[in-house]
Length: 376
Image (cartoon, rainbow, N blue to C red; front, side, top):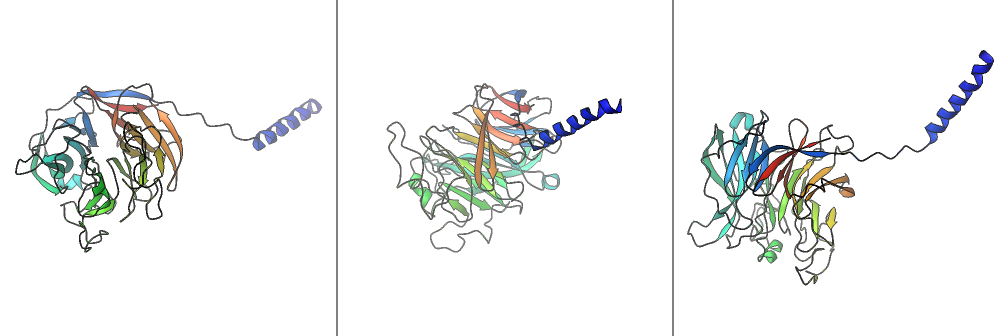
């Protein structure tokens, strides 16, 4: 028996050696599906998770609701200031204060009309305490200046940095696109403020003549996605290009991000070039550009949980025009791989969030909007 067994053992050892040297099989893409958590929301825009797992959701027509974990929609919260609802304007993003457990503060962005009733509007940031089904002590802590009569390009996302400062992304208001290259307006900017709306003393343009001190970066078009990198603490955003030219950016302190002088986008319909080119030495290059077709990105989140093998560290981006979820793998400040997900969904994805349970949640933008959970 020993003589018969020896060759089999040698063969097995040789086979194991060959397998050890063979290249690893390519990892199979993770298959996911969207499971409906709640529906019946009217153009939901922003989503934030309360500590107990319930969700705060904004609806663009001007309502904010609490959604129970079983998907039951609560009545609209009371106590919010008036919202101008027109075109892309309305009630937009929502975020909890990092110290919410102690102060119950909620922050939101919305389109606000001019106090003189003259038709001007701009993006504003308000905060108030969540008390049951109402917002108490609501106050506006930041107003985009100047107000301008437009129903387009309000932005706007909120992102708290690790140091507790608040980033606010602001659109260029469409016909005021050239303002994105000046420092005397908030059009086409990312601003950085204290939680009470004051200006941090270390903001890059504090003390510069003719510059608004809230500005953190400039040269943006219409930023509808913002998230803090879970390892570096850096702010990442994405913004709409015009006809092509959507961008994913690592936003840099005091930096010019190009719009509208440096862009990969083209003029609508006629397709002619915009600005002076696609790159310039003093302009921060995007990590990813979508050309020639825009996906119209909205909402983004970094994957930090282990729920989705192989995804940790990726950034997930919703697509409105593209009607899909996009997963982008990063290598430092470079986007190295992209994967399209939920292409069969057939719905505009407005927001993307990672929940406290580690699952990814999405908002769909429609008159019968849904909250979706991404399941394996």
